[in-house]
Image 1 (cartoon, one colour):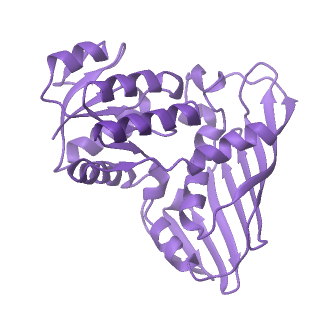
Image 2: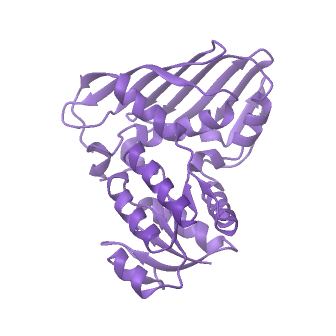
Image 3: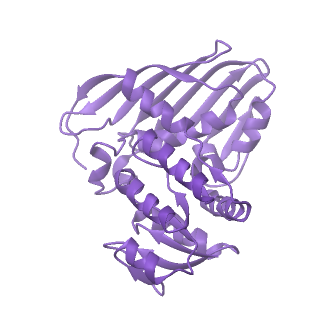
Length: 307
C-alpha cells in the first residue's frame, strides 16, 4: 500500500522512514512538510495538494506536533484516507473522540500509536502480571531533553506536553501491562519559570487492589538515560528497563533489543492489519492519565531552562 508521511522532522527521519522502507506492506509514496523531504519521494508542502494530486495514496501517517494534528487528521479522513497518528494522538481528548467518530462513521481506519508498547518485553511483562497480585509499581523515566528534542520549542508551549512527551510512553506501557486500570490521585508539575509545560513530574495513582503506584518523570537527566518500570507482586519482582526492551523477573534477565529497537516496524505492521480489517485502534488511557495530572496536579516553579 502507498502511504504519505506528514511532518518530516527528527522522529520521522529517525524511525518512520526506515520502518516504512523495511516493511513488506508499505511504499512511501509522498511526503508533506514545509521544511523536510525524503530523497526520491514526491514532496508536497500542503496536505490538500497532496490529497488532490495523489488519490492512489490510501493512508496518511501524521508525525506533526500534537496541536496542529487534529486539522490534518480530519482533512485526511474527510478525503477518505486512513490515518495513523504519532503519539500522543492529539492535543486534547475531545479532538481524539471527534476523530474516532469521523473514522467510524466513514468506515476508515484510525490508529493512535504508542510505540513503547511495541518494545520487545512489554508483551511478556503483561502475560506474567496477568495472574499476579500487585503490591507496588514504580515508574522512573529520566532523560536528557537536549539529546532527544534539540531545538524543538513547541514541546514547551501549551499542547506540547513538556516532560509528558516521554512520560506518556511510560504510561502507555503501564496501561498495557497492568490487568487493572489505574487513575491519578495526585501530581506535582515542576514548570521552569520561562516555560509553559513541566520539565519534571511526580505522580501517584489509585489501584483497585490497593497497590502503591507512582511515577517520576524528569527531563534534566545527565549521563545514562533511565526508562524503568518496577513491579512488586505476590510472586516476586518484575522490572522493565531500557523502555521495555529488557525484562528481569526475580533476578533473571531476558531481552537483548536496544531501546526503540523494532518498535516502529511493529506499528506499521499493525496499521497494515487495521487497514485490511477496517479497524480503529484509539486507546486513549495514557492520554487520559496525562490530562488528569494537569487537572489534579499542583504546579511549582523551578529554575529557567534553556535548550
